[in-house]
Image (tube, rainbow, N blue to C red; front, side, top):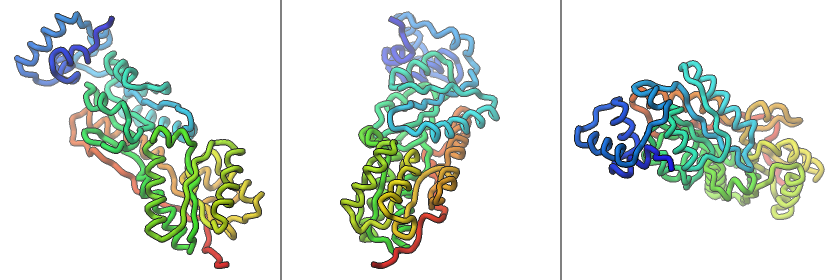
Length: 337
């Protein structure tokens, strides 16, 4: 069975990064700690990966971007983050290794132990992500695109999705709407407690409560049939519905069609807001009032944060990008009836 750097760290009672520094000489390590690490290396028979030996004292100039393409993920939007990260990394003379399979703790440990990469960007972060303990102790810097419930000891960046949910509701409240619904991501995204989806719900619900509005939340599969079904259910459960927030890029046009077939005109009868890329919002038959997903900015800043960490420069632990709502043709003042 292959001995890993994490096995050496556990045996020596130190962190994986300390083992790495003791073997590479990149940072000063006390003589006592170095001796303990070397003893564990000999006893366990640890052999650094050939790439690690060749790169001792240097870097691979490769970043890993962990983008698990799980069920319910909108791939085109995720790829916008990836393209931005790749482009920015090249400006820093780094390449990006894109990992799209489900990379749990073992996957992350495998990548870190081989010394193939200098640092990691991790996406699709869950509120209680099982990868967090390992990320806190890896011998590689990391940046998370997304915020777990406890971000202590981590570097995280994302759109402030809670504020985005609030902003959509505040816009509808300002137009006089009193009954609103959130059509959200596919159910499996909520089952995983994916951070961005949960935070939109938190913001939507708290703003509706604060404004004394009646509200409901409906996850929705990313299919036209599911869009039709959720539109019918919304109107059946909330006959007085006049405002909707959509957080599901794949069903924007099917939802517009569904509401039209149900006899509702946008925005005369129903005002719609969405969280989605601007290109999608403006390409629809009725351009949507929306909050853009700043994929390019987040991907770029994630790489910049990693570069600062690699250079041992002070790095903020938390970077939340403020949402900006662009008003278009899909929202209007509620007509009292």
